[in-house]
Image 1 (spheres, rainbow, N blue to C red):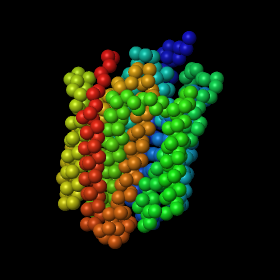
Image 2 (tube, one colour):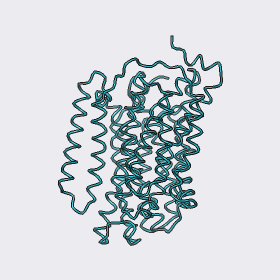
Image 3 (spheres, rainbow, N blue to C red):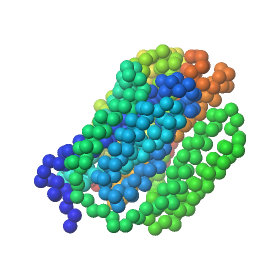
Image 4 (spheres, rainbow, N blue to C red):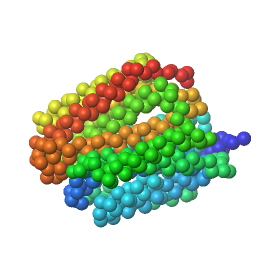
Length: 474
């Protein structure tokens, strides 16, 4: 009988495994965040518009999103520890290559390479910890994993601001090199977990291919809408590619014996409604995260480090209130915590938009704090509702789908923000680039996007009103 946890309990390697995995997750999360702070500097350095430079973020998120389920399935054959080590080595090499990039195209290509490694690491980190710890310690291990993601969200803005302000944007990637070398070396020595490997690769290759093509073509299609002429042969070809690949993915998953994604799960109302709210939450959140640094640097005249400190407000508030929100959900259950959180965030977005029009830094800081409160009220209860909506044996599937939806929402937020900024600038100021726009025009355009984020939050709240969460006994 398989007894990896019992074997590991007799020695301390499980704690080394914990440290290795948490560092891997931390670096993967950080690199999805720090580029937001550096984006204005990258845009100026390469002398491009934001519609082009945003691909440094989008390419990373789309690659991660499309490959999470793929690598989770691959690990059944290769083994999770081998895939983790290979993934972090690839992530480290990709980071170094990003720092050496001389053109935006090179940076985007190497970000894809970096995301390949990040997807390997992130897709199986939880499973490695689950195997490394005995049953009575697994909850604590999963708590460490969740805390690491939160710490990454807190450190990301500050670390990005410090590095960009002092050493330059390239060092947000170079800093991964020494850490990566240490982690890979430790993984090769200590990441030894007995695990059962599948003798046969059972991969839905066609489904994985269709999913990747559909996500990439969707992001391309959204980026083309900011071009001077939208209805072109190129746009039509990408639109056809998106429709065909999405249709192919749905048809394939319906017929596959072991589908990459079981579409029957999306018939569960209690699962799909909070999942949709999660998609809207991350879409609105990343619309704000992308345009925020441009506002504070170009309109308010702040340095990257100062911008990072302002953006520290939201994760700092969440770090304090998220455990309280989770405790309230467990001890004082109320099915509407997530709805209340969305309502608070909707009000915060409206406040941000109004204060942005007035260029009021204290007002925007206050609104960001309110947003952090709403986000804390929403995230923990909503995520719990998603996990509770499916039977216990489907927990891993629910977790993977949640990760995909989160990254897809982030990607859509980046795409919508970088679509709407140049469109508004061209209509109001006659220019389509952030770097050449007047401060008042840019500030008004960003305020309008914040108002749109409020509407997105309202739509999420409407979805949650229709949901009837399932509570399962522990």
